[in-house]
Amino acid sequence: MIEVLAYPFMQRAVLAGVLVGALSSYLGVFVVQRRLSFLGSGLAHAAFGGVALALFLQTEPMWIAVPFTIVVAVAINWIRTQTLLSGDTAVGILFAVAMALGIVFLSLRKDFTADIFTYLFGSILSVSAVDLWLSGGLLLLCVGLFRMWPRWAYATFDAELATADRLNVRVDDYILSVVLAVVIVVAVKVVGVLLVAAFLVLPAASARLLTGRFLHTTVLSVCIGVLTAVAGLMAAFYADVPSGAAIILTQAAVFIVAIAAAKWTGLPD
View (cartoon, rainbow, N blue to C red):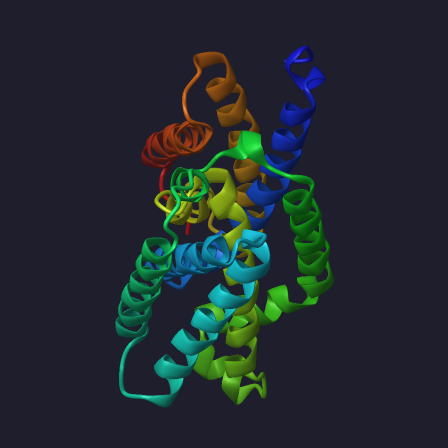
């Protein structure tokens, strides 16, 4: 492994895997516990629309995809809270609209670009310095927002009681959705639009099977996310397979082990 890290692109890839693995797994516990897996997939496809717009404008995809996905995340929350429609319906509508816009933007660009395949299937080996700075900034933001963890956890298990306890659950949900949107955009570069939902869910689901306390689930999920990201990247390098797929398959293997361990020892309370 030491000789692999002699390559600058591998150093950037490992650092990106650690940062994005930690961020995705940290937020993934809320996605799993709140049954919001479809939201993760919807925001990933919204990010595709933002990336397509950036490619059409011939600018850095991250600077367009991040605000584009944030707008979609806020719109989903607004529709869910201000109309009679459910959150899944809102995700389904904006999921389709964002994808349709992405297809239109790509069709308007006459010259072929391979960049879109990087975002569809992931390419952690092509991570740039901009991606790393954005990931590092997000990690610092999540550390700064760590005081939000008890509030998000409270609302996750009993939103009505949290509201009665004078917590502004609606604003907290908007903050969580915005942070989730930005993390998904960054994660898309690592594992791709098609796999990013699994990147959010698998470490958190594995951790949930192994421990019953939410704090322990969060810590374990982050550990699993970081370790599987690095292990999957190493496997991809030596096996010469796509890095995003290798990371997801590594996480899937851990999930299978977690199921077996939970069945053997008994499910946690």
